[in-house]
Image (tube, rainbow, N blue to C red):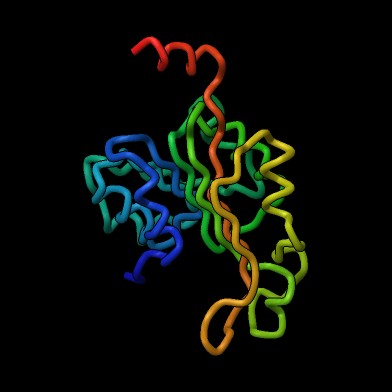
Length: 180
């Protein structure tokens, strides 16, 4: 099992224990485990769930789904946090934003343009354009809490963008919180 992505692990403190977390393109489940260990109810989605099944835990829901060639498998569900690492399917981005509950967090990190000089992916379809995650957040009304872009590693070994963003509370939610 690979260690959780360092940026996601650092941002995990922003996600309260016990909330609903969606791990998109979960792979081997390193982030599902990270948030599960923090007491979160995790839904891990991937088209190949063999590695995820080995992680079976009461707080882990495993969902096998082809996110690129089938309808969104969670149409009426909202999550308090959504984690995406090393995956980019642009048609899915609006769905991810819509799947965030009010106050929910999006933790996203993947490869960006310029990465082709370091290795895979090289295909521009799978590399973010300059500022693309920030543009996505602005288009979908998400508040950017942290954003980083550029080469990572010493010496550099990849070019990545990282976004921590929050769906604002609705006026009704904010008023209800103020009454507490």
